[in-house]
Image (cartoon, rainbow, N blue to C red; front, side, top):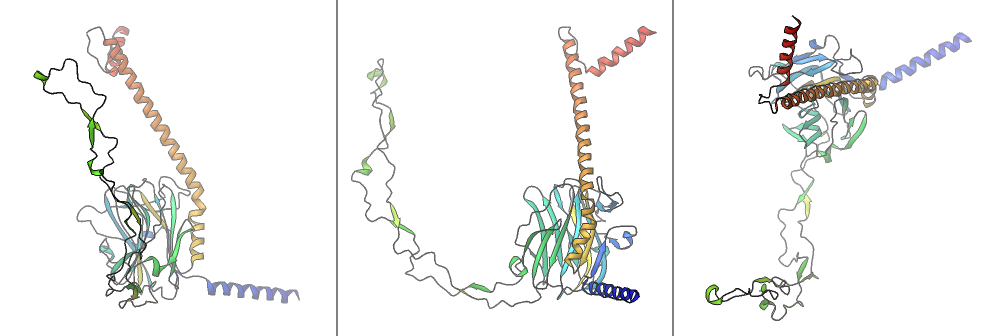
Length: 423
């Protein structure tokens, strides 16, 4: 009986594992930039002839939670970067698409991108660059004070469509995970660090299709349509003599100077002052228009150019992932990329990578910042000491008709005198 029960348990376990395997998501691409990563990625020659192509470093960065968890980092300022990897071609028709990666801006980014691109069809990876057509572009973009957002661009029929929602990105110097989920019901979600920041419909949040309804181009506003909300009050009349009120009047408090001579100085006239009775040009009061019909709007009609696309969310070919960007200040580090059809799988991947090390990374960053502040404080103290020495040298020279010399010169002179006396 014990053996039979054990066999039943083993069979149940196998069935459970088979059930999990049946529903488990598919991973189309995954990259942790471990040993051998260069065999999977192709560095583009884009901008190389202009000496503007930047080099990638394989590193865990200046601060990290695990020195062995490396990614690829931009290493040169004012450079273009382009690198890509190929995976088995697939389409996301009738399936969920999840694109996720981590990025860290160690340089306290002023202007530059941190996004990736998914491309389809045939791509010459050695020529991959800013003009290469892509299907999806996703990730953070920072430039100055105005641009600090997550890009989510979908390309359809050769036209790039930007998301209409403003999704703020992270702007600190730590690693963050960006996730884009596009579902077969044409809904989407954008997550940062496994937390949903934006969700909605691809139909509504991208202007990919023409609108279903448009204003009737043939409609005209009726001639008798009254769209004046306020009208002059017919009962309000200008007071009699209003226009005769002068803007200025002679100052009643002004007195003719005693030494004023009419024959020599001319006839004295009092200076003028603003007239308190003067109210400015008369304006007729306005009242609510009893015949107001509101602002006229053309009626909406079906758009003859609208044609629904049940696969608005889908791409026929997804074959490459690329990183292409321009950076004024280098230091952006990419890592832990995954393309899958299972959001739960992507979430677990983020938990096993970014989340596992984020606390240690934050501690390493805080320690680096503390060390930096201490070094800056020490340097500031040295600068203050040098300034005090020069002020002392200036004080010694005052009254002695001596040139004011930097203190280090006086200090060197004193050292020479001391050496001579000892000898």
